[in-house]
Image (tube, rainbow, N blue to C red; front, top):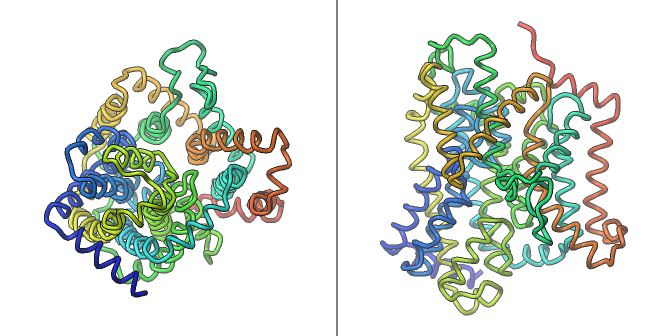
Length: 505
């Protein structure tokens, strides 16, 4: 305990210098902006800003990049709630209840609970990084390629459990997402596959392209098709009570706690920890709810749990980076690049050789969370005003914003056309009662699953039983199978379908 206190004292001493406070604030602001603006993405932003860090001190550069990463988790909920467009992959689940709350005139409480849940989860995760870094890293060391593959299978099964309607349709969406993830270059050989000779498909389908299409453009097409009055706004009744009520806080508090705990555990494991955490937290809340039918119709727990989970996971993902030098996701890989640029060798020796770097970054995360809460809560009113913009102004603005965001990633007009194609696909899926969210999860986890599947089979010399002979991998697959059986069983399936039956007026 004495060592922990002295280490934290060292960290806060580093983080509270005026220069590092400025870098932390810049990171938090840029991260929130990245999350709010659909189509940009954290990976692209960190990659674009990496050259700027060349001339910065190492600690300041890493504090700023870290702020962008966890700040984007805050901002990603904003467009999910207001316009049903997830700014980040981790905010896909938030659209299910957040957008419904916005349509009911409760966008303010939804955004406020998202910010409060994010703040609480971020603070708890920061404490966990400081206290449990060592023990949790030992757990992560027990995971090999087989275990990572099984963990991702479990994540996809979570998506099946949470999806609306038919289990078969949910599985079909996951398979479609996995197929889309295979378009592009082969993970091992780099040979183009499923690109049909189209040069622009060699890099595959980016998350932003698919997400903007099936959520953003498809939502606009659906509203236009429904005979929407173009002079009305998204919310029919006035938006009142920008801050959550006492009941909202009471309802959301347990969900925030459970989401934080789940996210903190899943965040240290590579393979889309924050994405899986948000899906898992939402699934858990719906399973234990007294009235599961509230979910998907504006349940505040459906916003609180995934937003807390993805923020906790985003911050605990720094544990394998700082202690083992293993990047659990693409942003952390860029952080490794930033460390090597400054002559820092990531790994266990960093804690011994450069404690001021590690503990300074850990302390800055707590400061960054306070900054993000201050930045986000006062701006809730500004975001809510977007809902009062008439459809005739809002729809073109969303289309232009999405198109600019998509084009800016690769400067490719083909990406914008592809997003329009996915918009038509998303509209068709909605009309046929398919849930697009599992497809996006399959798209995100597909490359990671393939990579770990190949590595596991190479290590096992082609023996497919490696996934069931390793105890941890077998346990994860057993849980996944159990969840799938429970979802398919006739009696439970009827109950599950009742949850999503639209209420009659």
